[in-house]
Length: 278
Image 1 (tube, rainbow, N blue to C red):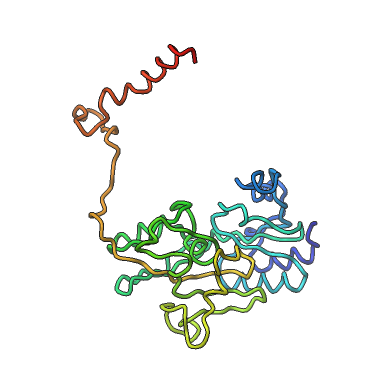
Image 2: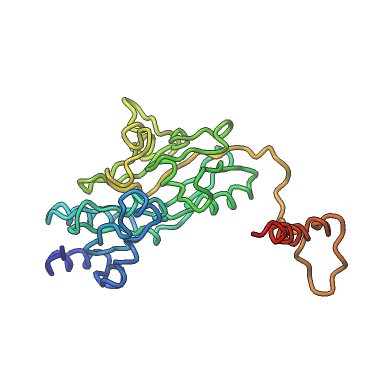
């Protein structure tokens, strides 16, 4: 269902004409995700009525208030990898693409924590953390996942959980735009301090924020999060180059390169398949 002109213009006034669209050719790029056929037996999920790219927390808060005024569904996402991240209940809904909010706001090496915006990937944070001898942990979906998505919004099992914990326990505080448009700073941030503890005075909201598997954007928008970092106890991090890549006129490959027998393995395999009539 298309948005009424009044509704669309109200949203456009917040983010600007350059950062909102209702063009079908663009909207259709937002409803095709790897899991649609597997889970829903459909190639496409519901096409959004519009896609917005807000720049900051204030814009997101105002957009949500407009959505509440006109009865429009909204859903935020960062990388958009997971099929649930783009799924809407009906066509009278909009997607908030958070790729403009892509800053690493702080690396606190002394207290081993980082503050990031939604579009910061685990990969980007790890590169910055490594400069300080710190480590973020590796989640199962890979380093391209968003830090906030993994820690605050979705099931994020980590391969390194034995020493970096996981399942939201690394969340040290968030800035959270609620479904009403109100802005909540969870934990120590609520008193105006740094986001160093998600558990402030009184009961904790960390379980409501994420629970076991996360709400996938169903309870508002996390616009900033502080996450715990860990010491890196492994070898010094160095740039690695595959041994079979050589500069022009470089010396001949040495023993570190794949052996002749290894490189000829595919050929031997093809010959064996030919002999067997395959």
